[in-house]
Length: 205
Length: 205
Image (cartoon, each protein chain N blue to C red):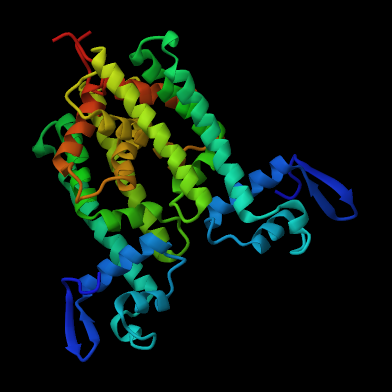
């Protein structure tokens, strides 16, 4: 992109970006080259800054990584908090809803979620993101357990395993989903909920 | 591992490896550091060779990558070929079977399959692997379509989408499955087939 939406011209040939655009371009670059494989020099080149000017705009690579991971984790945490509110319905209804809402978050924040799912724990920022992911995973397993206990879903499979597979199916979207394609987030969310809860096998109606 | 099973001592302090062990250690290293991030020097260090000796054992990094991707792709292709044999049962039975067999391949060849699933097409070897993956994906979608046509599975979801989600759930195993853990490949294969075909929702029995 030679002239992205967030770009403002500040002077002759000097691109100016708002922070949201810097972050978005950085996330795209991290996903393309890998976080470890991206240098501040690469980022400067991507944004059209000189190597010395980049530090006026971006304190550090780690800072951008932390912001990106927070973007994904904050959204997913909201979804979990909603699902913990028992006044919102049965555990079964809240589990179906959290599957759909996760798909929506993934589609709306696909670059940040992609970065999050590739984090391996190579720094304190990454370890903190992994801790937050584990908290989310544990709450999802709790919800599967509660839905089994209320008798709404099958109880012959380990809840941790069900939770991993269910959200493994959701997370697999990052490998192929393209927001500009013909499938909306709603179609994909419906398909995942239908397959996982109702099953593919046709039943006599 | 300081003295892996495949290691033979050829002389004082000179490790000797069979080709299978060299490949296995290389795949582990590629998965840990990323293929692009691994140098022949890293590989030499991993195997305890000098930088000059490594080329006596390994023609090139590309050669190892091609072997690794072939390991995963050859196994998956066998599974697809079996599923194409109409004398083996209905499309529905063959689809259930291909899900189970894919889990077995993934568990038995997890490092090679992990490498395969991370390939992005950065070289001719990677592009060829992506072509073979697309062929496999298309045959899986064919099988979903055939199972819908014979009336065994629901026909209200696009077969391509069902196929992507079904095998997205299978492939998500690489993120967390540990062969030394307490869950066998059979337990995981059963769980995936049960969730995807029968659904999580409990039905009156």
